[in-house]
Length: 112
Image (tube, rainbow, N blue to C red; front, top):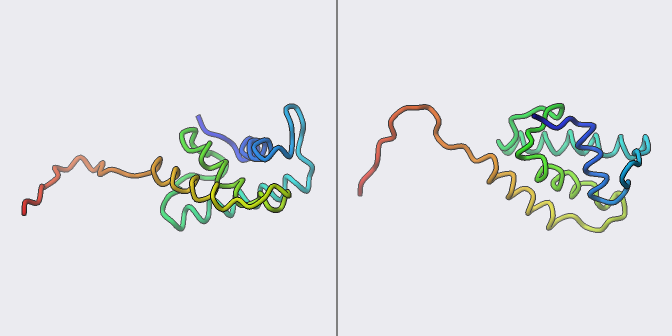
């Protein structure tokens, strides 16, 4: 299953305690977070981390992606600096998306 952009927006806003349980985002907050989701995903595509669309974020990376996006908008919501949170989330995303050779070809060992 995958997480939609709207669900990710809700998770980011709850993570930042901008909205509570059962509360909806204001239109302005929704636009801010949606733009951050798009920008964060584009950054991850550039870094060769993301291969997903923002309309279908894989469950296994959703929490780390949420924290990464939250780090990008934290200051805009008056929630402090998100540098450390962003760096940890990015490291988690790298670890979660590390690709092993899946070509089914034999791997040749190099001996020194």
